[in-house]
Every structure is written in structure tokens, then in C-alpha cells.
Length: 352
Image (cartoon, rainbow, N blue to C red):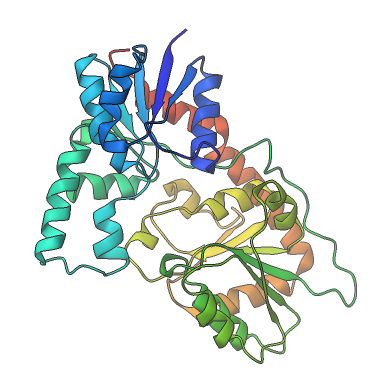
């Protein structure tokens, strides 16, 4: 039975990690963890502790700081290394947050450093085809070293259930949850709620983050908008199923156009119709369907969001039908079987 060494100061309970570990285990892999005390010195620590040679080293998402040491150790032991970054530090600082100008010395240095870092991996995982394109064009990762594996949703938690049956006087709930960052565009949701003020819809925003205070201020005086604190992960599926319509992301940033957020995977799996910004990150066959349970609006367009919610909320029976279609879309495009096959393709050709 092959074994994979998960390397780094990672969070095993983060959803991406949980899903990938479950898929690997389901394909017969034994998983071992190595958490170095100091990321940069991980290879030295692994040698001192005489960590057994695995068939594969896996550096999970957000762990750029662990990659160099893991790569040195893997190279010495002639073991292939998979890196699943999920994000690019350059993308985050330059394209997404705008903290560094692209032509600045710091940005140029960061780009060169990240290119060298990504070059150390045998395979680099991207969560969408557009992220793979970004890694290839911006970070110079060779196409034959790239593989796409969608994030998906944990099937054991996020299971479909019909939308709440609405009777006379009931008000449908439109739900967003997230970390209130520019990519998600929560301020667009509040503006849509303002445009929709006076109509029978409740807009609920769950979570905290940099734009939370601005959104609360913008929603002042709106009786149709409420804010809730974070929901424990295990309770999230039940909270999703209490709502009628789920919201994705609406941020007008480069990265927002390249991702499929967790909330979209999870909401579709729960059988909820989703409204999110249009993006070529989704499967092409899904983009052309009108019955997928997924509705598109332009990034940053609060008016379009308000209109789409109005159309959906005005027909509760349609919401139920579309929720079932959403669950079917989840099974067809993002099921564990589909993502598992992507993972198998990723591992093909490695010297295991």
C-alpha cells in the first residue's frame, strides 16, 4: 500500500485538506503527517527524526513556507512532490489586494521568488483551469507539471434537501457566508439588498472580515438585512438548508474571476439554487446550461443581483425545482467520483 507524507504546518481540518486526504485514503493511500517546528528547517528536522521515506510528499494549501525544505528532503530521497497551493502569494499581494505595484522592486522580487519555489514541485495542483493558466503564464509552471483538481464539498456533510416550503406570509431567505474580503464582494450584496428594499426577501450575511464593518454601515436602516457571526463548520450544512437562495461571490478582482469558491460547491451539494458572478472557471458544459441551478451576474453588478434574486424569490415552486437541479449539477460536475478521477490523473506518471 503506497504512503504519502503530508508535510508542513498545515490545518488538517481545512475543507480542501479534508477532501484531498479522504480521496487519497479512498484510493488506498496511507497518510502520514510531518509538522516541522520551523518550516525553513523542516528537512533538517526530518533527517534528525529519521522520517521514513514515503512514496510521495504532499505540501498542502497555503504552505509556501514549507515547500523549499520539503523539496530539498524529497530530492535527497528521490521522492516526487505534489504542491497544492490554492493561492499565489504574488497574486494575493499584487493582483488581489493591490498592496504592491506590479512594476515595484518588491513585486518583482516576490514574483521571481515564487517562480523558483513552484519550480521545485514535481506536480502543482490548481483548483480551476483558470488558476492553472495563471500558474503557467505568470509563474512559469510547465503545463505538463500542472493538474486541475476541483475543491468540491464533503459529501458526508453537505447533502441535498429540498428548500424550505414557503406558505402565505413566509419570507424567503437569501444567504451569504464568508470572510468579507474584496474577492467576495459583500458590499455588492448589501447594495443589492438596498435596491430590493421593501420586497419580501431577507438578506443574511454570515461571517467576519475586513469589509464587515463597511457592510454593516452600508446596511444601516435596512430592515431586510441581518448579520450573523460565524457558524461552526459542522453546523454549516444545516444553516445552508434553512435558506432558499445562496449567494456566491461578486468581487471585481482578477482572482475572483478565476475561482470557484467553497460556498458554491457546498451550496450546490446541499441542493440550493446559487447566484454568483459569471466566470469561465466552471466546466464549459455547465456554463451553457439554463437548468443547472446556478445563475450568473456580472461582477460588481448589484442591480443585476437584485433582479435575479427578485425573479427567483417570486416563484417558490421554481426555487424547489432549481434546488434539485443544483444537487444534480453537484453530482455531475463536482462529485467525489469526479474529483477523485482528477486526483488519479494528477498522480499518473509520477515515479511512485
